[in-house]
Length: 138
Image (cartoon, rainbow, N blue to C red; front, side, top):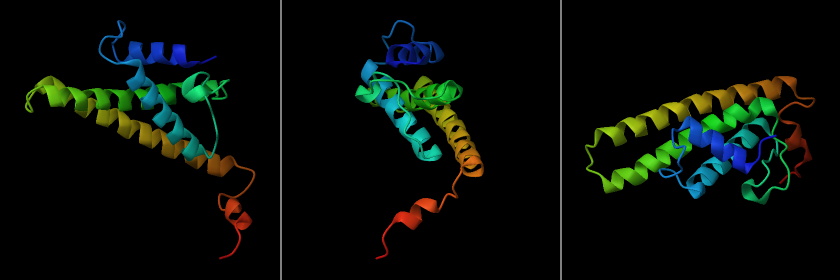
């Protein structure tokens, strides 16, 4: 089962930061929260990961773990690159490459979210507009 410690380890492995010196826990946690929020919005769900945002249990299905890792990794890489860019010369190639990689990964994450949303809409028991029927008329 995925928890915050395991999620951080998977992110560090994917981002080649096994020592934890390049990416802070705070950056990884925030990136994971944002990616999980995007997954929840795309699928109209309320998944959680134990320890992330004080969640007591993990409800994220195992099939979506890799999507969370990829989304959080893309956000963390881009965040780290933006922070590093402030410290380095604006023309620093390594930073530019990292920003481009992070943006490409985030683009892939967005495509996967769209696919998740489409699957949810096709397989849902209610039509996607059903929630609007509950809202009072203005």
